[in-house]
Image 1 (cartoon, rainbow, N blue to C red):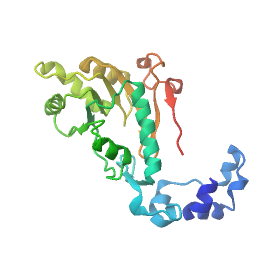
Image 2 (tube, helix red, strand yellow):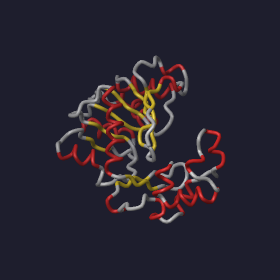
Image 3 (cartoon, one colour):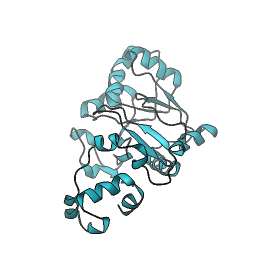
Image 4 (tube, rainbow, N blue to C red):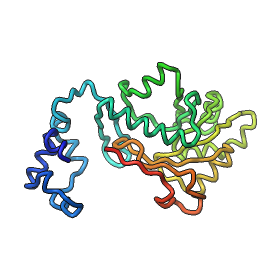
Length: 244
């Protein structure tokens, strides 16, 4: 909060307009003195006012949201910040058994990352964590054929897309699709979807929750028990991570 006030013009103006300084905030109740911010406030403000003073926009890692819940939003991070967040996501995947040489097939719509993404760029140079995107706009039969061609060790994607594809697998006995595990995210995972994906791909399914703004927020805990008993597992079944 102190950093935002002293280094970011947008937040300094926001505090000043409310007649509040960071040192006035001592407990959660004090936050009521600050007006609520909407994404539109940030989106409409000049870029230079939203970045920390001295930041070079050309040197930042850029991520764009899909805009599924409104208008697309652009996030800027330093390479160090982005690197840390990507490594925290990798840490969670490692708990599920992810290996650095695993071939991954990703069934999500491309959102438009940045060529400056340090983790992905380094991994590509070292030929680690290979990933190939699957076109989710094609029909399920072509989608399964593309997955079979990739021969993934790990499948990642939207649970709805994966559940639909999994139901078509019995009609493709000639295709070999045998991931060790499946990671889903981007939309709610219902008990029915979980059963369909697990049975179709004959692999365990793990649920991750994240946003482009914060990267990974929470992930399913391996010791959390059977998550099919409710539409949304209780928070106690997630290993959470809060990032700056």
